[in-house]
Image (tube, rainbow, N blue to C red; front, top):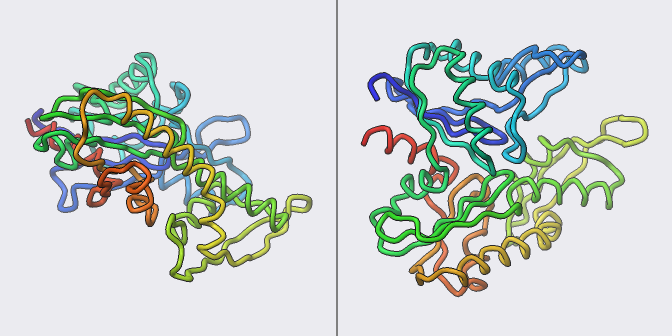
Amino acid sequence: MARAFGADIGYHAVKLYLPEEAEPYVSEPAVLALNGDDTVAACGSDALRLAKRVPGTVRIIHPFSGETTPDPDHAAAFFDYLVRSRRLRGYDLCFSLSGRHDEDTEATFVEAAQMAGVRDVMAVDPLYAAANGCGVPSASESAVVNIGASVTDMGCFCRGKAEATASCGYAGNLFDRAILAYVLRKYRLSLSLEEAERVKCAVGTMTPGGGRTVEALALRPAMGLPKKIVLAEEEISGCFETVFDHLVDEIMALVRGMKLDPDKIILTGGGAKLAGMAPALAPLLCLPVVAAKEPELAVIRGVAGLMKT
């Protein structure tokens, strides 16, 4: 590709690779602001600014869930925003779609990018991109577990070739929803999904003991009045147990079904940033488990690497 950019399209964010910029890796919130008639009012960072400036007049949605085919109009609006704001008209695009998707979903994004003024468009597999982004192709036999927001993809690679792959729905958003359920059950208060994600990033851990706390803004379900509460890492860790157990079961099922015997498991994706995830998994899987450096960037780094080949 001559003038090109890369994109990793996920639930919470679209990560971009812009090789001509001083800071080539940037992140854009994967959100839309919708008017009352469901027309698109703003996209990405502009959508969040609009929602803060005129609260209650627009509705914020995450259009790229990874679980269903996105609305073509929403995809078109978002790509138009990206291309205009980053001056990418006439560029080629190499992109990866996180989560489960089929050919129709992929075609929706290709058409949306081309309508926005992108020239040639190429899609790459997110698991292969993640493996490429954390150096797995040079390893002998390693398993990659890419923990996204809506889907966890797993695969075993031997000398750069995927020998076995699978996916499951136990991923980052279920940890967020476990926080929502816990706060509602214990405090009789509700959190937004964005606030639960912030709490998870601040004090979420599989190995509590640091004594960290975070202040969260919750709402009384009946009246919608705000209330601040303080959440500790010990209680947040406790509400993760069921989701974590299911995730372990899914990973173990994949490893047992492999013909290869991986020498280690490498964690990538935003979910791999959860503190203590790797050391909590290792004894249960009876394999060395490590988190990639900046695991949330593994896919987009892999996309960038593939663009250079």
